[in-house]
Image (tube, rainbow, N blue to C red):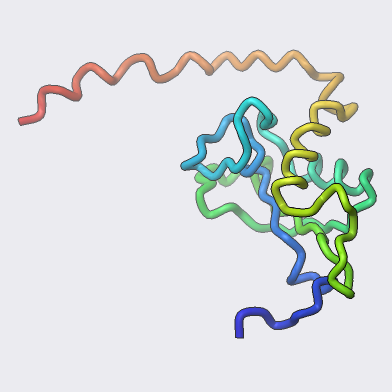
Length: 141
């Protein structure tokens, strides 16, 4: 039996949204699912929840980790479950017909959050990485 229930309004039938899916700092191999130019820098579960709750969607947060997330910090923890369909199978909101719609909407709205617009001085000093260490690859025989 694939699902315990066929009812789309049951919590286990909600779609999963990990912050990794819309994180511009991640590669596709690391779990990002939308184009990087549309993605958000290090989104949190709370931000995803706030945006979707404001949009009138039924959501709840679980304390889970994305399998490809190596960083065990609380900042990267969490998974948001989103109700897509009502009990009769109809969409909860017409603008969210698939999970990609939800991801794109969240990525578009998070930068507009008050918490984001206040602390917009996001110059990360450790962004100068990946230049050294690529020269010694040739000498392996």
